[in-house]
Length: 236
Image 1 (tube, rainbow, N blue to C red):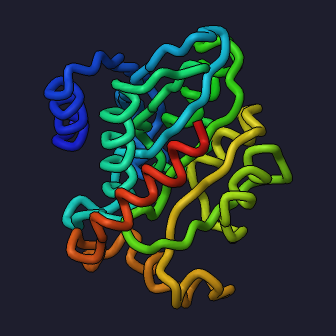
Image 2 (image 1 turned 120 degrees about the vertical axis):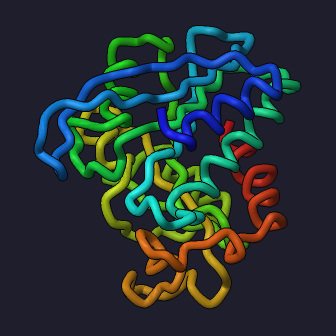
């Protein structure tokens, strides 16, 4: 129960939004000293058709505790909290599940919050899941990037919304895909001068990940608001 988990639950409580604590065990492959409890925070907004569900997720755990971890992945957590506030007042055709996942930084597709989410999806805990959108690096920029493992309908939809396809490093999207959730993408935003850069190592926003320099002052409230209102809402 980290400070970040407590913050998420506090914000949801302040908005009077019910949530589920989904606590699970997995091995910490970095420390290799046994099992640890991890936790996903799930928020379900019910639609008219409660047999079908659209899912959004962002991992709340961090790689470097001394960093603000703004791009990886605090901005995405904040964007999903913002989306929760908007969904509370929306009339929805399908259910929408917001999942704040744990253990992404463990980097093990068999042992992560995304793997636990995939299990819940595959066992139809939320009915038929139509698509799953994973948020990463969503703090700065007006240009949408998207990645996926293989072509799928959600990827096509994101490209139609103006998303630029970019291969990305490991993320929860990989855990979802290898655990049987195939209509899934990873999505984020980048500034103008970075969106068409092909070499991931030369993209400044990506280089911030796991670094002390990944600070809140490098995020833009305007860009984050725009991302939620124009992209995430459009994907529901």
